[in-house]
Length: 246
Image 1: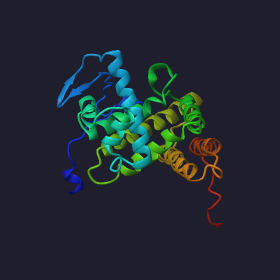
Image 2 (image 1 turned 30 degrees about the horizontal axis):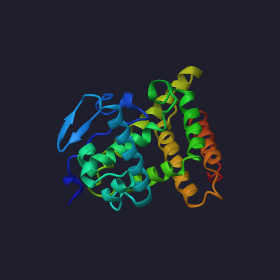
Image 3 (image 1 turned 90 degrees about the horizontal axis):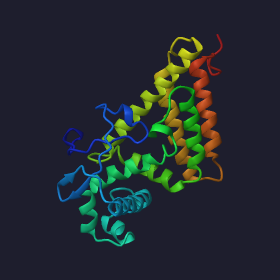
Image 4 (image 1 turned 90 degrees about the vertical axis):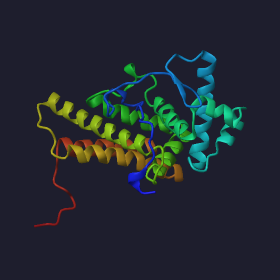
């Protein structure tokens, strides 16, 4: 199968930045599946609790084994259900993965008004706070690292989700830089798009290093250092210390 022959996938609603998805929607429907049937009626409290239990188990198993090697049977066993019971709630393994990714994103916006990250300077503070919070939730960090890496493979059902997620997050960081410039009466930084991509790349890369050797990598402090350094260079560019002498 070539990349152009990818099967249809569910578009993600990004928990971090639902207000700026590709289609401009913020879909808060609750979905229950019975085969291919979907309903937009709110699920009963016990059903919602059961779904969250399944998502927590799937997050743990997909994070430890990856999507391809994480069997639905093992997820079902962990929550005391059958394979068919999992499919009743989510319809398919592909759909379950997308819902797991949404569930993981919810942890990044807990306690934030409006359930989305803020603008301007506060966005960068939020990113730093997230890095500190991640030190206390290695399971969620590992799941993100594993599933995002797997998403680049052909026909992975999480690929479109991560494509959208990075696109939206880059846009959020760019907008935050522009808001900071407006507050300070500065022109937009020339390298703002590169700075946005670099901040996200450094945060994700540090997570992998920390997962491999948490005794040698300070996830929070290193993330804060990198975010501050990149932001300073974007807002107030200085000559590179690596340029050759004239």
